[in-house]
Figure (tube, rainbow, N blue to C red):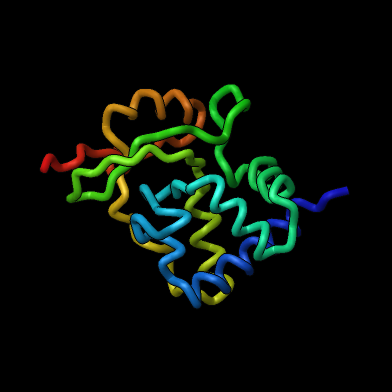
Length: 160
């Protein structure tokens, strides 16, 4: 039987260890696998994030993904059938919009992993990554029944 709590502990330790040596793994638009959108959620680049966690933890990618979903760390849509979504994002102050295949992970999980495993004194601040404002309604539906993404997670890219 798979022990999902043990997998989560392994993820926490591995993430904190790697962030200590490579801080740009988190919260650096264009370089990071996860960026804090608001006080409650990080957006993660789904495939690279799962692949790296799997490598670091020496656990199959499907088991990493299942552990994150089954424990509520990775958010499922309102009908509990989907945890990835294609979404347009941009770095605040820049005009370039990229569409990414993303998932959402609770900020509490990542921030506590960093604090309790020694990589940080406190949780990370909100990043400069924003979701295009026109996606707000679609994401509100995705988060139905959960704390929605806060307004600061959205914005309009600068026009160049």
